[in-house]
Image 1: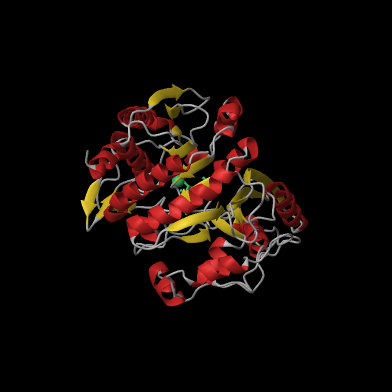
Image 2: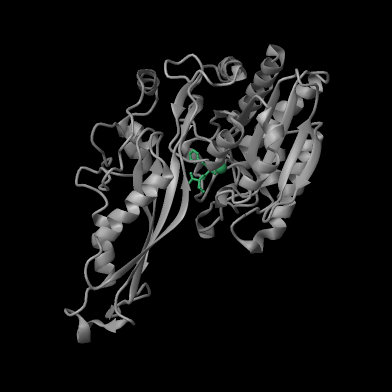
Length: 458
Ligand code: BES
Ligand code: MN
């Protein structure tokens, strides 16, 4: 079957996990995923969770066969703002060599690539000595609240596997594939500043009370130093510079500061001490504001001192930091900076540590890694070089897939992550898309990788 057609049909189900109005879309995507797995020759099971069910596909076999866990998520982000899409988000469309639609890149396209690679392989090699467990969850975009319970229930089965394989990370494009060696963690916060008991006329009372928006702005502005670094005591404790081999990989990264500025549409990059822009997005922690509000937001002007104001922000975390520690440091710093006359409530919305998988053979690779991981990384290097024409770069990622760290902690499994979307893919934004050539080559790479893993034995 034509892979582009398969992904297009999958995209048609609006599986927005955060919004209960999309329950039918979630169910449709789930049924579609189940059929996809059955079509690949796997035994399918849909497991209920407190929220969105998890779709499982299994190929069982004797314990001496290698056992790969394939992960993906069938849920997507909301498609808003709808009027900014060139074609309807849930009617996939091919334009200029790309497939457009919500979920085309994050993550329906990439995990379908993996499943179709496996399907091709099993069709060609029906007796292949390989065990596979496919896990497709429906809550990744809302922080995977049900995944912890799922891991506990399946800990024995999963701990016995060799490694996790997934494509939910980014590559630079131009045919250069990245094998992702780290994910940043994330800590999320909401600040609510409260001042007077009610909104006030700014002529009657202006000058006598501290405006909650002003207080909020001062607190927010205090969270960075003029040099761009995060201004929270101890924020950088334990953060290490990239290893030499990582710097060598970064040198091969095909993106200049000039082209990055052009891509972003900014006149200047915002730099921080001692890191290049690429390093800053992948190897360093950040604090970014995601939303801010308060007061009058309508047309024209309203002379009001609002009673409250809020801001939402997230920290991306790197190895050496822990979410628990950063949460306490951020909370303490914010509360120490509250001016007289307002109250501040700090709500913590999420906390996940970073994840690191050092390619076996590199100087800082842990000796504790399962032996199968080395074979998997070697197989990926060959498979990607053959399918894409050049070997992968091994780089850490700026984004977060929190469950990958949870899987490591609960089951000891490491993850082999192959980046199939690119910055042009517009993740979480209008006109999300996936490159068609990457779909074809990606399927070939997965097929070759899994065949090599099976051949290597345990
Ligand atoms: N696929 C992304 C993660 C990602 C984004 C990797 C960009 C590489 C580059 C994933 O679906 C995602 O969006 N994750 C969230 C995590 C959050 C919801 C806890 C993220 O990174 O913001
Ligand atoms: Mn994703």
